[in-house]
Length: 297
Image (cartoon, rainbow, N blue to C red; front, top):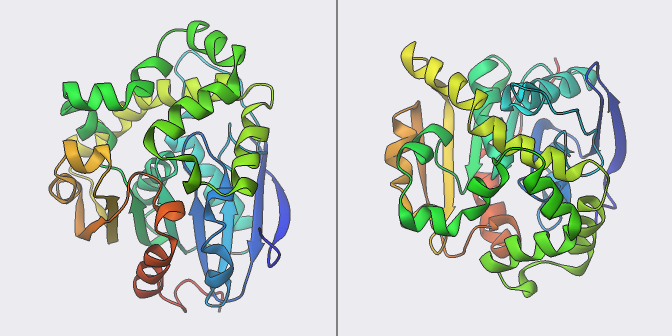
């Protein structure tokens, strides 16, 4: 899937982050969502290398990156910690400023990344999310039924871990194939998702990711709101017209509550934009991201 890319392991103080790097030009970071890996970008990655230096990462707790231990405050799986991983990886590659496109949980990491490190993120594209704090505050019956995993994964250990570990691939199928039919996912990408969900420690990391989102991440988001800290970068938001986010939230209005420069619209698909509508997404990315932004002098 990624012939134009080189696999790289980035050894950070916290642990090892697996990534792929390819192409020349302005640095562009791609971050995946739950319960996937960087393989979700396979339809658009090669074309992007013709214009950018593309850096695809597996978030901590996912793919072939390290699984940190659980902690009482869930700080090891906070979006702040995951965002710091991205900054540290890009520093190893020699980039102090870069553009970011991210989906699902990765988009929540990207939100925190742009908030905590505004000098590092020059432009931001987020796929099929509204802000985490707003989604919890505006939770409805329809949202809770569709996003059942949000409320399952945050239950105290070891209940959700034990149930997932009984059949990790079954969990993957129940979650992803309820949202999209199997034809959406290429056999190569799906094989990667299955392989990685079976890596020991994955269930714990997935649960801790969501526990963090319901606790420490909300504290960080609330602190931003109290201090009137906002995203200053150009932000483009895309979301699936048939997805739960579109049906349950006023996406642009919620992002305009936390960001200064926002635009965006729906695409004719569900949640998995990069795999359901890759041509349309690629066109949006090429229009939005700058080919010379963040280049090393």
